[in-house]
Length: 316
Image (cartoon, rainbow, N blue to C red; front, side):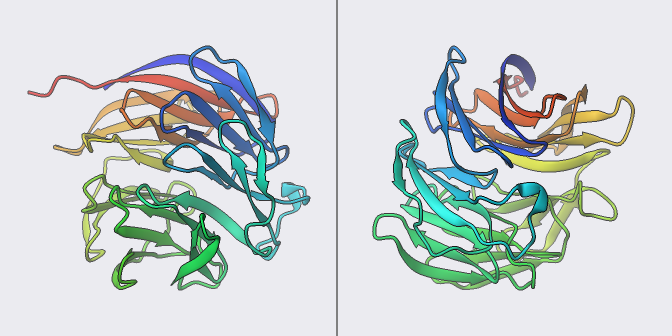
């Protein structure tokens, strides 16, 4: 896997930030802790604008909606019980649709289903599924932890939902609401493989022994750990499932941010890039698998999004 840097975008004042690409990869979104979500065109880096929001945001699979947690609280003083409003914006123009889709709640993260107009809202004490058309809560999945949900990821067909809360991940069948399995593992990164058969986790920040691992998405049974010498904080599969990409920070010299790529037919590391100026907090891959977006600190107190071109290796 060849990774070529294209350009960077400096955005909100923040030490931790989240990045997303629009479904057509024409836009890159960077949400920080302090001053909202900034948006640029990927082709030439020209700014679209910015809106109120935080690092907890998501873009709908049709590219029309931007959902985010909004608050007046300085994130440097966040507490786990603080309440956030759930806002919806037009993802192309950033015009406000509503600033309170739900009553205020202790919101942690957001993710859209890839196939339906459903938004998963991670909060305490459970994850809620919201129909963004009717704005109704149509399902709830318990986190099983007093700290509520931290992350959630759908399978590519929307049928499975992995939900993390504290030292565990629960895997749910979305249509029936049945619990399929449970993973007892501290985690920072969480993703479901495109075929829905695997859950990948990483514990680069919270785990006592930082590692990336694979689990059976149908049962939660462990499959294997990956050769991970660094602290992986975010994970993403390429759309065809050929590669798993991790981002985070390096324990070894040169210290700083890292990008690590595993080839999924052998689960060997095929690319490991170290020495980025700061921790890479999140990543997103375009639907055609050709672009990678990462978020990190620029070293000046501002968050930074970087766009990369992905070129898979020839497989023999």
